[in-house]
Image 1 (cartoon, one colour):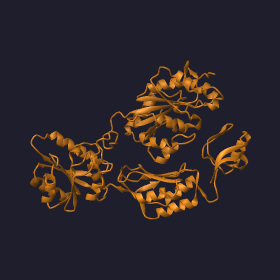
Image 2: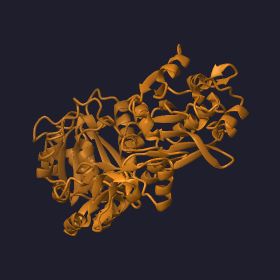
Image 3: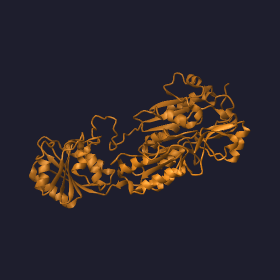
Image 4: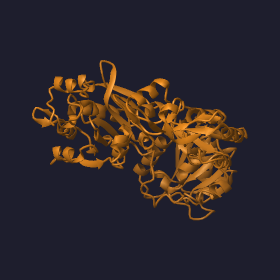
Length: 534
């Protein structure tokens, strides 16, 4: 592949390196130029472009990514279609992710043009979650390099989602004088919630004195009718001969490991009894927050073996208690999920032929201020305004409003640069970001609240999109799961292709004609009641 300046007469078939405008037409980055495209560029007076010219033995970025993904052996995983040199792979079931790190390292060592990234070993995943991504860095790559990677992929299973099984679990809670029944009841509720996402089922609970014999008898009885037994001791294990490990052995079982290098979770006990696994849960397992108990439980429910050496190897990354930002996926979602609004106000209004449409007056008020005030009147937690073109004038139009500004110095690159600038400023506690265009005179605060309500009702996991008469429009509310993907967008493109690639559920919410009013031209703006300002 040759990359660099290309005379326009030689540009047919080349791939544009940068977004380029020719009169009324705008060609996106990575656009493959046809003869008609070249003619339009020449007519606009463009004599040279920066582009990539593929050699005969090159594969385009999408073709290379698709070929590599197709050569991989995996379980419970599906590959999405290629876009911008990337193929994302998603879990077909909830479970535990496993990966052959040696194969991944070998692929990434072939050449920097070819990359693959995955989740961490033994990461729990939800159905539909992205677990790996193949990305080709340049616009094309030599087919010989792709062939070298596919040979590595032929070496066996590269990764898998080990699906959670419908495991039956019996629970024992030991009791000491002074322990409240409410504590035991809460432990049961937390445990049931912990098992809910994996499809495992808590079948039976027994409460016994905190003594070896009654615990052993209860464990033996539950092991007969269940796939696993979990024991919550009223007092934490303080010795390897303490009640829980001693009860497992008295019942005829074997203690595999007592104690683990994960904090919280140090005092976990793992054993076997009649071919069933028995876990002595650490005290922290009474809380929904992630701890070492989750790591062992998830693997066992997914049908993976957990050995003493496996537990001994959990120390690296096992310091959980000192990491306040670590995700806690089993916490119940709050009733009022926070949503930030990203208000896009960086564009050049190029179709207006000069004036900035965001400063056009509607009822004597600049359009961008009118939109911002409606956003402030909604149930959104905060408003982030992305500025770029004529940033000082836009900020002046919003003077006195409680908004945060995010400057986009790359606004000429297109929509994606503004999305990235805005998403980067969204609060860490926000479950989603609503993308609102600054030139939407017909959208009200009530319309925005309808989108937020639908997002919250869906648990903050779906894309919510405004619609009118069945036609999709704006605003669009993106869940946090898409934020990382936004950072990879390029050119004059929004999040539509990202939403499609991720395969997330999309909810359309009718908000009236405000979703479809377009004021990109002078005629449309004046028809909507606006007055342009020079």
